[in-house]
Length: 328
Image (tube, rainbow, N blue to C red; front, side, top):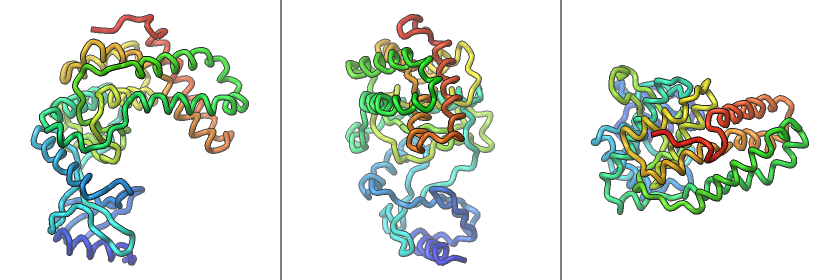
């Protein structure tokens, strides 16, 4: 047993009463198995993981779990605090370990499950006091879109120099990114804000083992980015992550919107904005930023080329911004 493992085992026994029989080290967390076969996740704290934030997050996730939304939140130690010091590596906190697998956002069925789960998260979070939700960080959607557009402006000349094929889609990239950034700056949300996950990659979405016959067998993990926000943010993340993995058909975007509307209706104005933002070339921007930061390596071209294909498919389905009527 390494010094770090022995140290963490000792802390878990003293602070939480967990007698550890197994530890699995992952990329960003540590899996814990107790003597009673209960499982937990230990996460080392980031700079923003204050005691107040974790206490607020525990309150929110406890409320959500009571309302039927499965969301892994922090677990209090025996002394009532959430952050616990471990001499070997700093401070961390405990979370429940949900038994399941990562959601497949390329799957039609699982994408619908995830969309319904996110809609339920949004709708049920409105039952929580706004004063509590207001203590969570806010990063307006307009700022996120503008940051991405600004990154695109910065890296485009270098990316084109190394990959001239980008010039064929340059006009559409600039048109859609400008229209989306302008529209979201002018947007005034009319759907009530809610608690949003804000990092809906597949590894933060678990399809629960033994729950496949339930209506929404999806649990949420990793609340690092979570906060009080506008619903379109989470929906855009589902769409973009799914688009990367899916063979998107003509109903790809409208289906996600329709499933969401069944569980947590957006206002007409917010639906219009979301439909426009579906055009934003998020996949291309993400892949270009990653590629340019790595000095445009030849072995990384395939990711950019794949994202170019996905963006063409996006625009084939959606048409020009404003050129296709909003479904429903």
